[in-house]
Image (cartoon, rainbow, N blue to C red; front, side, top):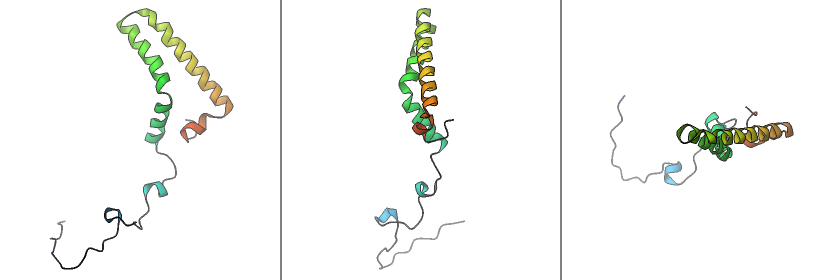
Length: 103
């Protein structure tokens, strides 16, 4: 399928849409979507838990590269993270943060 050749005319362009500054009559993705996508939920989860992820992964990497004495620190942070997650789940706040079903 080929594109038609553009033709020069003396008429003004009356095209409507977001490229010319007017509103489009087409529905946007946000208006038709039923909720956040899996990617958005994952990004929100990672953003909320970035400190916890770093607290577990940095000592774990140091355990394998520098000294085995960093392993208990990684385990302690993981235990505190799990306790915090259990408290949030019991309080019913697990679904509010991600907007999902708590999965």
